[in-house]
Image (cartoon, rainbow, N blue to C red; front, side, top):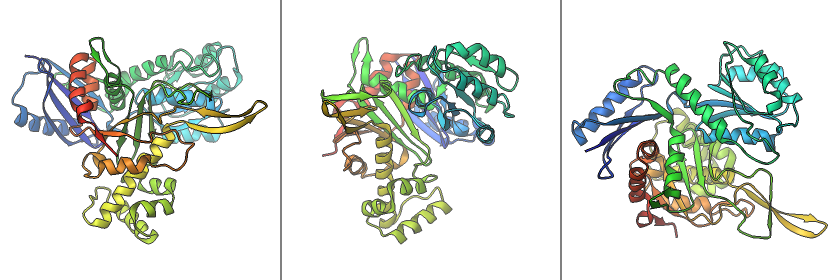
Length: 465
């Protein structure tokens, strides 16, 4: 018998999953509040005690963990042009499981450096210029960053011709530099995997020990990745399969939290209309975005601001005074659970609108432009209109009896420019196993896939129609 313990130190809950590898079964799951502010092992021990009660006193052959506790992996990204290298930097950071607090483009100012110091990022990603292209901006930015008074590592992933100059200006006790390949060596061509690898390496070496997540070496063999990276790994595995197992195809996933909304797409995103031309960066097949201004509790105001009061009222069936009263109530009590019909209606609207906003920001857009040859359609970003499978996670979706209605409302967008799914079947991560299976995939891919398929395969996907 082979048993594996999978641990996710989440920002709110520490979640444990016990797996029988030989039977490809989840034996039990358990969770408890994450105690990152004191000793994170207190919350772990409480969850572990619950797991033992459910699964028995098991001898685990492997213990693997991921973490988004204490704010997760907080990053700042600097690039040259917002639509190009700054966006490439952001995609690299998101794909590595980071939360990008701020993106800067063009030449940094003194105010920008002061803002970076105020953010105090875990990592700063410095990019800019294609190889052989613009050198002035990234070298200026390295000079400015050297004035920063905060200590944080810097990942250099810009113009290779400026690498030595920038490292000489930056490298030191406050700002150790990790140099890697350019995230955009050629115009409109992404190369983000090397930067993502370095970001994860720093996460393992610096961030975990700094936040006290690796005290119990005898109990936890190592936190091997940020939680969002584990989720992205699981979704990619489910979509693509393994050498001996066929995946379920292109898919999307939504993780709706109290403060943020994460969107994932495992899809090429090529134009569905052959007459459409692509514009801008070709985005990664496995893509993650995180919206830090929309969430069910800490960012509820952000949902209403982004969607607009009129749309919030329409979706909830409440008038503006009732909406504002609900927002005030949430502001006073972030742990509020909906009890009355009015509260449930408002939470429904918040969930549907957060998912819609997240999907629209994640997906590409299409517009008609006029050329000397006549009108043509131009696509920027991914075309996800043909995606017919969405996996949902996060408490507001998992525990809602109306989760299919929420997704149906979310994808009913009148804006034809937004290339989001038009119809979708929905599967719930009811046991919160996505991050666990992403961890397990690093140990046994086939077992991880088998468990994922049982949970999210075609037999357990529900139509929104």
